[in-house]
Length: 147
Image 1 (cartoon, rainbow, N blue to C red):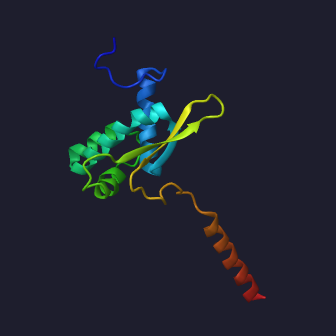
Image 2: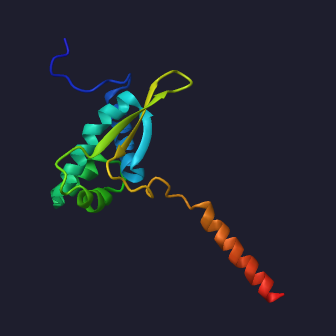
Image 3: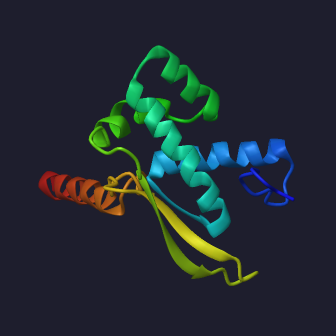
């Protein structure tokens, strides 16, 4: 009987599962929207929401708790500064899960987990091709002016 046992094992050891959720949480905080399997998204949701609630406190102890719950490369300052300010009036429910269908290879149910009122620019932090085109056009105009 599994009375009072929460969470799924996801066919992983406890250390692997812990590392998996740390990395998923870091990716969700960085990009504010990620695509993963439905069971992983459902297990990730309470972890991330607790992190935001801790970040809303803003104390040194809260920052240290966030550091311990995220990998070393993660941006815990974004939780403390940006996300806590965005959700200071909200008492919970910072994330939403949208079912996406089934993965082609193994028919695993897929889902999108994202922050409510997310910053749409955070998803694409890579340099946009439009910016590169502008730089190229500027250099072409300079070449034309020189001739």
